[in-house]
Length: 343
Image (cartoon, rainbow, N blue to C red; front, side, top):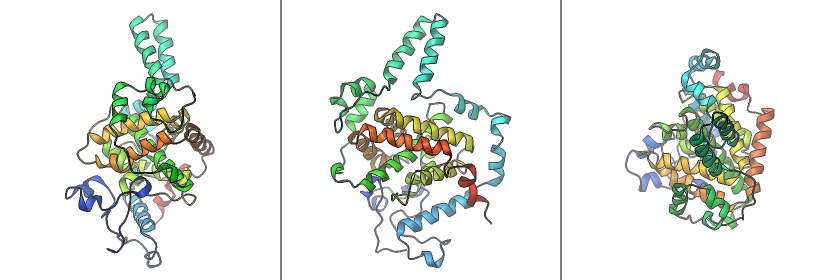
């Protein structure tokens, strides 16, 4: 243990010693997979030549080694055929129409009109209005309450959530391009975790949802920090997909790729849809007795940051994700699982 170095974590690395000085005893063990988050710990699996690397690199090596150790090859091979053999949760996850899919709501509306279901038409039309994600221009660096399009998009509960999020000390105007890119990569993996849980619970979070979101996210489970350009979109997607093949009930590469496509869609829809997803994630964490601190460390600062950046930045990032997914560049099944079968 190296006590001379004090690790920092959270979005933009604004926090330190949270688990040692402020959290109740034992919370870090319950909340994270990363051991001793407020200390620099060298992994027993790390080679001598890696001992001198910085804390973040050593921690990443620990994470990847733990993933390799926990990978269950038999379980993975069994789930390769889940699409053909049938599984109720898998079928529900892949067939559901998520809230960010306006097309799905329009199809429901058409079907309801054909069946002359007047009350159903009204309900769906109202929902469609709430879910509208047309590409209207949104003034940058303003709060939702100051933007008519934003105010009409969010529900009263969502608006209340936004109003109660405490402001951070971040000076967004002074963030470097690398810090903005790092935040986008963190957003990418949190959306992946959220979408996976949303699909596998049919949009109705369970008591396990906060754990699922934590365990799929390197940032939440290991307090991972990204350093562009060394870290990029394929890295983050590959790590999220890997974890989805190790920990949750459904360990399907095909499902993981569907989740990535959802994340790309959410990002291309723009920041209002992104914020809605983050608010739902925030609500899940808020209800957890173990994972509530993630809101302070990551979710709340992300929501604030998303409101400050340009709409086009979010949408262009979604297009980047989509282009990588289209070519399966570095996120193919072999790339995501290659280290599992070594040795």
